[in-house]
Image (cartoon, rainbow, N blue to C red; front, top):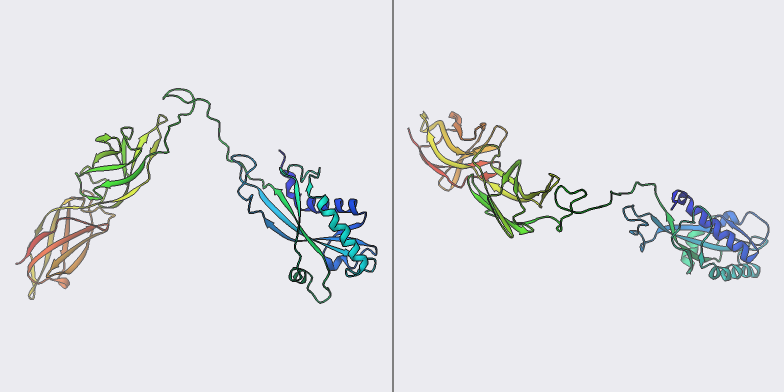
Length: 375
């Protein structure tokens, strides 16, 4: 199917309708605006005026070939206006001309013009007479030098215009077989659908269960952030994995998904869910404190796992009497096993017992350690 010529389809339709009308009515038929047509050709005639082009809503998603984008399907709306020898459209002679044109339109209901721009139109062009009320004609013929002219409206559809867009073709599937067989491997599934992770918040060393549709013994890995974790147990509907105690992944919110390795070596992964990896705060040790009036300042060392790396956002808060007395931003370390929070003299705290709240990338350690802030 040669579609390159369809970029001239609108003009080809206008010429086809003009030619058919002229042949059937034996009248001069022009294509112009009504006001211009009234100033030319001193002989009885009919004039075609294309006043609207719109997209065909019934065919807008209809493609001619699978894999090729849908072309443009148009509806062309025309106005047919008569003119007698004196360029009048309201005389008895003009009314006779209009009746001759109107009688010819139903005879042209299905047109298949043999011109390059229209020969690939998959359907015949359908002509349908429409209502041309006073409001429509007044809008189309308004102006200081133009007057109201009785006319007939009709539409032509569907008109095809095929843009030059490359199709989305792919090689055909020739054979389907086991790994190593020639051809493309086709699996009877749309891929795993992850629906639930238990628990959603956890610390290093925890075992997670991931469940959903098409999750079974074929699943061989779990994707957590930048880590690829092995499956430690699997059954129909769920798999399990264990979070290792390594600093390769910081605490915080991460996307998690399950995946299976295809014979080609590529991964087919599920939709992701969001889980929270909490830091683990094992203990907190207060160093030597210095007095600043009645208050004290100094260092406290936090030990644990995933306490925050160099690029992480880490806050240590001192909590007492139902509120946070001081919150410090701490710089992380590569090992993520030890952090030091320093209270300077300007923020010296009153002596007493405090609870330390640790947050790394928005994830809070489940354990809060009690410290004695005393000399």
